[in-house]
Each structure stands twice: as structure tokens, then as C-alpha cells.
Image (cartoon, rainbow, N blue to C red; front, side):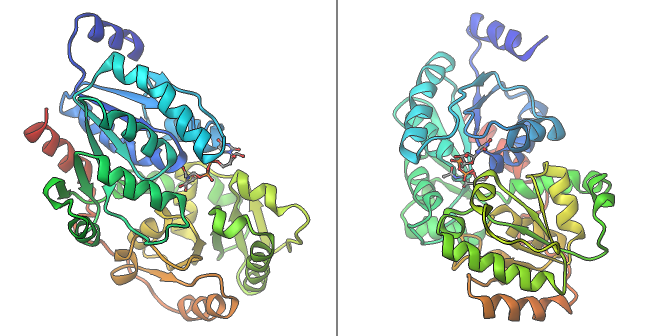
Length: 369
Ligand code: UD1
């Protein structure tokens, strides 16, 4: 039976849907995959809503296919807009869906605009809002994601934290009563897929034995032309001693025009989840402004130079392989030289054990459903 048909039956027979799960943008998909699996394993009725914030197959469809995520019962098809318009459109299109399904719990993950928009709508309905990846704080309000994190935590009813530092942030903000440390769902997905990722055909197309892997997409790094060009120059210098594979987000690609890129930096389109993990696992070092890659490299034991002034994931620095290097050329090169000769071991912060989604579903079943 198709998912839609099943949904229609469930709604017609007025069988209550327990949980609605929202995914909108690339970093959401690997987070919802293990949660949806576990909901099914535990016979918790669920529907999936895709907001359509990301829509290219490289940013969305490929992830569904590779991670075996079901076809969403609803797709809001909002697409790309300014923050305000994107958030508003998701809200407008999501409200009737929430009304129709009226689930007991809405699960939102991460910190993208779709997370905020749907949590905000549901917070004014009877549906309980559960935020997965609660408590992360960069304390940098210049980041749109930081605004989303703070707002979502404060309007949610149930807060599932990834790490102890997150729990401490939630306590400081007076939210501890609704918080629980469950671990990291990204790690569930990583551990479930690592062996497949290590055998991806893309790995044999890379002609270097050793390489650095680069991703950049934060507005703070790519939207200011001078700063962006300086970063590329720094990476060009590094690529003279270690070739660099640059996985280029669509917004970054648009900013690359007119900038000189040496042959030692290979610019690729965004790759699928498994390809990204395969490349991360094989890289000698990762340079990134992504949040998820800071966590993945810690689990993989690959050094990560985070090209930002802060991180909302300090456990990856304290216990893992992450170094916050900012955008300063000397600091980046000095740290690169320091890590490149060093052996790093995979690290597992507390509860980053592949069982976070199990804990989440157990908690939902025992307390809220
Ligand atoms: C969003 C998230 C960010 C996350 C990132 C991962 C917010 C505030 N930001 O930023 O936290 O790290 O996703 O990718 O929600 N585009 C395409 N195809 C797509 C999607 C986007 O070409 O499928 C292009 C469009 O030109 C668009 C631009 O990328 O304008 C930015 O997309 P958008 O969703 O607005 O934000 P991201 O930078 O992707």
C-alpha cells in the first residue's frame, strides 16, 4: 500500500497519527532517517512533511534514496527565498497540513528555517513540539541558525539534547524541566552507513592518494567577496602541499565566478550523503564551516579545521578532532601543519553511540504518546 493511501485510510478511520516529522533542508535528512526508522520499528504512526526548502536532487532527492527515507506524505514545495519569505511560506503552507493531520507530537530537527517555521506554527496548536538537537549555541546572533535554535528551543515542549554542553545551555535558559540528553542522531546515521560509504565509486575517481576536503557555504564566509577570496587564496596555498577536493554548495558556486582556482583544488558539485561520508573518512584533513561535518570527523577520527570563529558543538573540540581556526590565514596554515603530521583516533562523546533515535522514541512512547 502506498504511503499516501495508508495515510488516507488512517485519516478516514480517524485513527490518530502519533507523530509528524518535518524535514526541509539537506542537513535535516540524515537526522530524520533513523528517527523515522525507529518510529516504524516501534509501530508509532507517523507522517513525513518535506517543506521543499532544498529541492535539487543533489541537495534533497539523493539523500532520500540513499538513506531509504519514505516518500513524504506532504511536500510544501516552498523553494528558495529570503529568510523572511521562506519562513513565512513554510508557515502558511504548513498550517493546513498540521490542522488536517493533527498529530500528537511534531518532531523538528536542527536549526534551519523550516525547523523554526513549523515549530512556530505547531506551538500554537495542541500538538506537542519536540526539538531534536536542542541546546546547541554558538552565541553568535549573526548566524541565522543561532536565531532559529534559540527560538525553537523556547517554543518547544520537549527538548532532546545531543551533548552535555547543550543540556547546560538549556538549564541556563530555564528550560531544563523539558530537556533530556539523548545523544546524536547524526551519529546513528553515520554508524549505520559507514561501511557502504567507504565503498563508493566516487572514491576511485579521486586521483590523489591523500587530499584535504573543503566545504564552505555559511553566508559569513561566502557572501563577502573579499573575505571569500582570501579564504580561497589560503586554501590554494594549502593545496600546493595537499590537493584539495572542494564540495561546492550552490550558493558558494555562484560566488566563485571570477576567482582564480588552481588545478590543485578540484571543485565538485554537492555530493550525496554516502559520497560525502566516504570522502570525509578518506580525507587527511577536513576544512569546513558546516556543523554536521565537525561531528562526523570526530567520529571518524579525521582532523577538522572549522573555518569559523565559534562553534555550537564544543564537545567536538574538547573531546574530538575539531579545531576552530576562524578565517585568519596564518592560523589556518599553522593548524594545518600541526594536524597533518599527527595520528587522530575516532572519538565517541557520551551517547554518540548510534542509539539516539531509540532513546527519543522510547521517551516519546513512555511520556507523550
Ligand atoms: C540552509 C540552512 C543551513 C544549512 C544549509 C545546508 C537555513 C537558515 N540555513 O542554508 O543551516 O547548513 O542549508 O545546505 O535554513 N539552492 C539550490 N538548490 C537547492 C537549495 C538551495 O540551488 O536545492 C541555492 C539557492 O540559490 C538558494 C541558496 O542555495 O538561494 C541558499 O539556499 P537556502 O535554503 O536559502 O539556504 P542554505 O544556504 O542552503
